Length: 354
Image (cartoon, rainbow, N blue to C red):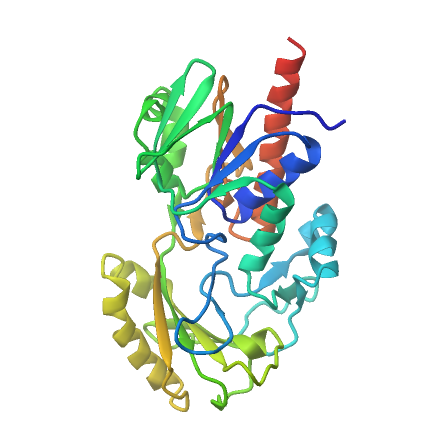
């Protein structure tokens, strides 16, 4: 039975936040959902970036392709089939050189329109009220209401709140949420133990007619001190449009990212490009370059026992969710979203019966 729920706030328009919103809309048709994200667009670490100057294919600055393991093929079948039937996911057909995973039970997929299209799909389903460029800095509890305050001073009142941003950002929040976290030393300790890897990404855009002298879709670079992975986006996604130029994305390895974490992304781009020229000397000079720093790239150490979500406060309900509470894959985010939805519905059901 689809019922209404008090306004639910979701901080983070990445994979977990979008899936939570979609699941809640499916269960509670008349619910009011509001999603906040600090970025200009949605996607989070499943981010796709487009060129400003060059007329080329976009690049995936975050997740490169989607790997579905045997564990989740049945468990999340409906999500996978939905994305595949909608054409949002297609099989990875290009060669990924140096890929160490040869497990035949794992299937790999790409998103022809970029990995952010996966997030957009679920967010569109949710029909949630979306606010981008809203970095949440405070969370306050007043009676049965949660008040969320953005850096720009905007406030949002919610009956329940789901926080899906990286754990260090949750620990930096001001307001009464800091007192709530302090009052739960066991939870706080587990949150403080969560860690992430860091890396830089650089997108290279080319105008139509530019020839890339490589035929693989992606390549792992194990021997370089800087670069870990390079993808030729149009080949990786099996796209061919003569009106668009090719594009390339470069990911650094984690040690390089950690060593230079406090450096500005634009300061590091020349160094990264020099390493790229060394490992791929035939790559032409791009018409446009975009750098990005992933301070929180992938979860290195997850929350203890990977519960899917954590109830931080019961009334009003505040839930912590995201890949830090499962693992850093699309299916990890889906699993966290399912756990979050179940926790929300359980509380909603309890309130309805009082």
